[in-house]
Length: 318
Image 1 (cartoon, rainbow, N blue to C red):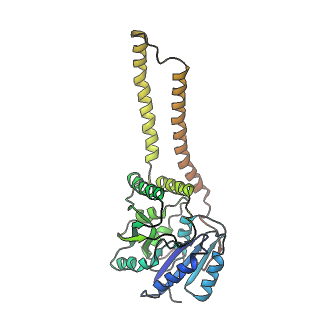
Image 2 (image 1 turned 45 degrees about the horizontal axis):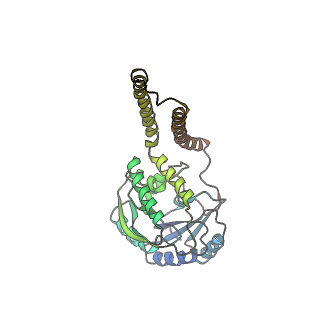
Image 3 (image 1 turned 60 degrees about the horizontal axis):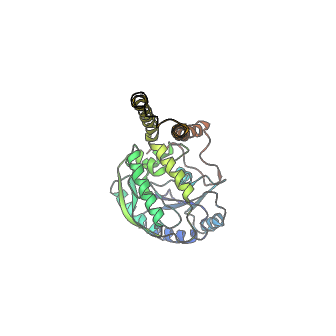
């Protein structure tokens, strides 16, 4: 097969019910595109029949390439592996659960042909999601826009097209706690978005429970913002200022006016608990950043591959 013009990267984790339909719809889109295509399925330690289904798809379609991790490394790492192995001039990142419709891909390509190097898909509607998920997602995107040092478009996921030059830039970034939609904005280049309606899951259940969502939000904030550390400093100054203001007030109330309503064990206990809480919160925020530094210092590989096609050269000219 000739070098592909388009590479479609899809992380797969326990999607045995969805994968055949995802391939069918994606293949129909690839057949209409104006150049050779490849579909890179990244199996992130799936425990169901997804890898076996992938083997069947590869046997019937040489455009299908499989990357199988030795264990589960996470959704963002799976996207990274797909980008590392992609050979196309344009790389489309899409989830395999069919919430992001493959039929939107030609619209992303249209914008790419207009000269844009990052084309992100922005959700106009989100079908099949609970009110809690919608509210927390809206809060997350607005919080990260306020805290982050980059302007991340609201209501966008990882569904996007990135140009070859962006791919080469992203390959140079090997940080472990990855927020790929943030990294694709951080690199710059000419960017735009398109609106689309996000569909309900075709089958199965979400692979992002609340615990993973919280961890994902922490990775996003700590990767692109120092605001939590600055808040700790500000809180320390405020508490110190409060204590300095309280000292003369207590002296006046006690010695001049004769009031002793601040005495006793209750007020001491409240003050100790308050300061202990502030200190623990501060240590927790510092620990989040320190843990990420520790992970980077170890310099472990981002992922371990059990099976994959030959990897493109690490250094390429754009």
